[in-house]
Length: 293
Image (cartoon, rainbow, N blue to C red; front, side, top):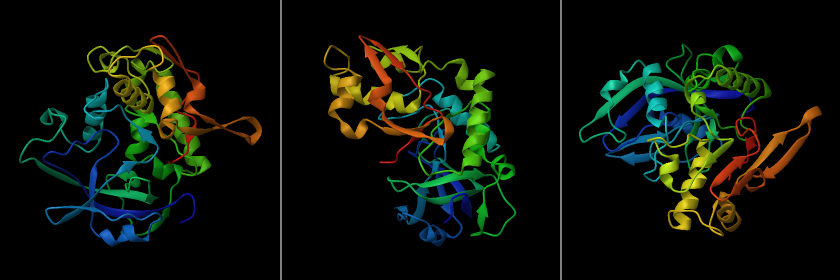
């Protein structure tokens, strides 16, 4: 499928008991599940109780974590509730992070999908509906982008940008970055709380929902893993820098677009500095393109 074109797939977003939706991922059942088979890097759906479904990864966004290995970020619940509100669901009825026993919910939706990521999740722009035949290949224009939850979440300050190399056309990526910059300048949502540039962390509580620092979700995930690797608390020789040096797969590669069309490839460890318990991030991670693993 050519860059900028997506397959429209109609179906239902669903949540069942013991599932844990957040602001950038939810399960989806297509009206015609065979449509996924035509997409690059196809991965078969999971099956529960004879029902086939996919866990979607919403394209280009990354919201504060609600349940990363049991760890929770500030604003995780608010970002999930923002998705529910966009879907015309009253968030007050979802006073939980994991769906309770017997819970069943679904709503009609459509997605624009151009392939799967490495964990077998379809990468999707989400629409409440779109009056085009199921299975149609559609070019994602700026006017169509404006109808997606993905752009809404960035505009409303519900999500950070999570861009990946080769994933978007220049036009769409530029519009998403512009929307992010406007939301940040207006201090909407997460931008009232974000401390990614410089924050202090001794234990996981320093990044948790009860007074902890809100940071870029990928940085949060690396800090959570590094803290567990270090035994729950950082000390000399056992901090995030050391973790990234030892765990090569966690030291993300990304591309920075330089002036005059140039590109610079770098590693997360090159822009993350830790001195004692203070971490500084020396680049805007919302504007780089991460390289998929």
